[in-house]
Length: 94
Image (cartoon, rainbow, N blue to C red; front, side, top):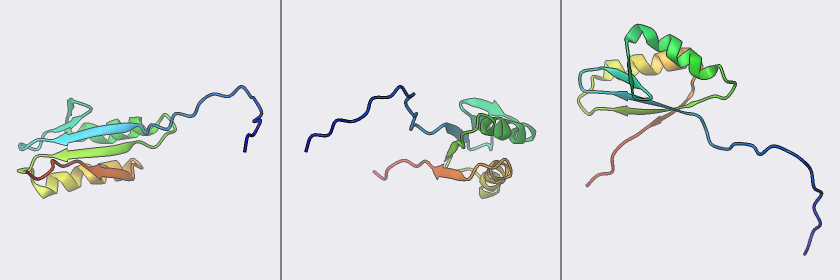
């Protein structure tokens, strides 16, 4: 059924989520969007990601040799900043 829709000037909504790429290497170093971050800087980095009004998605990659404690420290800092959308990035089994 043909429908004659109204025409309006509107800006397109950007459906792409803001992604915060976090990686932890085997030595426990944390990288946010490819930049190494000291443990003490994480609260500020995560809080800055929340400033633009859109809640970011944290995509976490952790080296298989990373201590679980280090992973939980990073996740706790993200949660304290208000980041609740968290995805664990893995490699497919071969």
